[in-house]
Amino acid sequence: MDETPTSEPLHTLRRSDRSVPTRLSLAVSAVLHPLFVPFYVVLLLVAGPTQLAAFPPSVRFYLLWVTALYTAVVPLLAVGLLRSTGRVSSFTIDARRERILPLAIGIVCYLLCAATVARVPPAMIVRKFMLAGACYELFCLAVTLRWKISLHLAAQGAVAAMLVLLTVGNAGQLTGALAAAVLAAGALASARLWLGCHTLPQIAAGYAGGFVVALLAVLLL
Image (cartoon, rainbow, N blue to C red):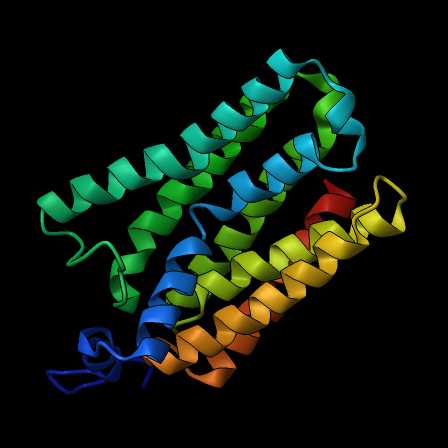
């Protein structure tokens, strides 16, 4: 069983706890939420040691706001609408069955973002990243139909795959960013385990699945 049958599952009890580890875990989970991760990556690409940093400020701002709009603002508004209609019980969407529709919406948003970013041909890597995001969410959707997988760690796996490819391809000095991403994934995994949101297999499957799917998507699409 992937969901706790009791009326007070562990993650509910942990979130009501006010201890320092719980507060830190909640903060890490919020900061590294899958909705915000794409913006962090694109910000790194346009402001960090990559070729995209040489783009005009107007182009870099365009890439940032398009990313924020399609991967954070629109999905958040959609979840809010679903919550108001009773389709999801909370913004955390802990129940496996409630994740299906938000994931489907996320896939569409990633595809729309990829189509919009395609207007800037030199920013092909951003378009590829968005297509990889759509693919990893499709993977999560397929798994979620039968089993609860960690969406947080799937996003981190996708980020790691992107940074590995950029580092190997000499597209920028991103070794430090890759190391930071791995450490962040470890902290996030610990946080999700502490909060009782997932089991270790669910976290490992999310990270590995997100990594492999994003890697293949960037290489093949």
